[in-house]
Length: 117
Image 1 (cartoon, rainbow, N blue to C red):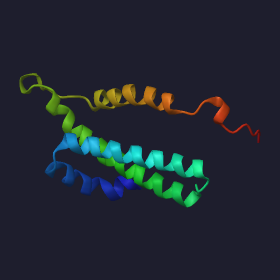
Image 2: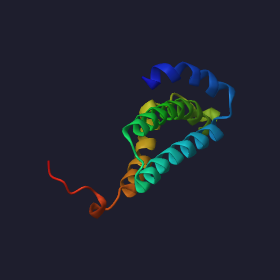
Image 3: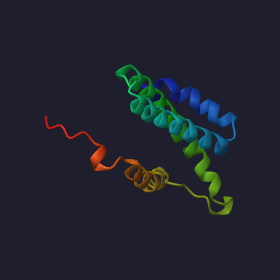
């Protein structure tokens, strides 16, 4: 849903703004949302409504980040060496860097729920 709603507007927006600061800003915003969920859970105020809102915002920011990354990545390659950069390379680098960070950010097993359903 966010890709449909945000995608077209984000494409126009990305073309008009500087891409690197936009990449940084979207990642900071996603980090703040993620930490906000952790903080509300620690205080005991976490509810399903908040998770829905945060999920939609994270998805929208992910769309903006993805579009910006696709537009920014070719500028990293010198013009003489530019051919056609496969999108798999862009997504591969994102996955290569993102997955270890995600694994490292998971709580230890002692914090996870021990209920067996």
